[in-house]
Image (cartoon, rainbow, N blue to C red; front, side, top):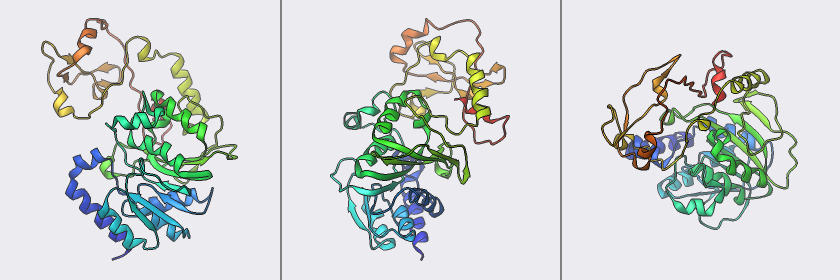
Length: 347
């Protein structure tokens, strides 16, 4: 069995054993060989030397790096079974079992990884990484910051991660912390490659830990190069828009009213367990009706009854809601490359 086939077989068996729900909760997604090779290829444009994968799994990135000529390889993972597979496919790599967010690790010249995705309920993360407070308390966000600690000054970090941290207003502390520590060398949109995470759009993010000399950031959709950018800051990064799309979005903003200007917008505890907390029925006394994206259609609101069963303090706000009709516009990001559809990227 080839090395790629061995990794794939292990990942399929792990998925079967965990089940979709537990795998999503753990935020673990198999990296196909072609995707791992592409991320390594992009990273090696900016640096070379020793390479560390802090979430090595069965060794997909270590194998891709070895094939690209990297000889000094190190991998860390919590899963001992995955590391046994990695030892078979990349026997020359130094492998270690542990949590790379917590243990001491010698810095490397390159850090390349596909960290776990998903909301983290560990309060330690917010204490350990203050830039996560009030924003993306997500495992992948923690690994963005940790990877910059694991790479030497001037070294390269390349991560396969969701792109939400670039767009969410509440993630401004994370963006600020990243820019204080590194230059953004490349951002590559890779679409939605994971069948088991069909709603997760990912990117290859390449950073160079300061001191670094990066004048402009390379931006691409896959291998389609877009215009390079500069001047990134704490504000959301809408880097995939063309000049014309940005002008259209700016025009839309001029005639729109942000939801936060007319009501209270909050971001509380996120469990994702809608089966327990949300009922598909009309609200009863002491409950609050919910409106979601599925309810907003062109020029109308077509409500599919949904109820927040235990609203807690939110119930006190219900009496303050506006009772007269409003026009609601849902802005979402889309995979479509058609100009008439991509305005939806105004999310």
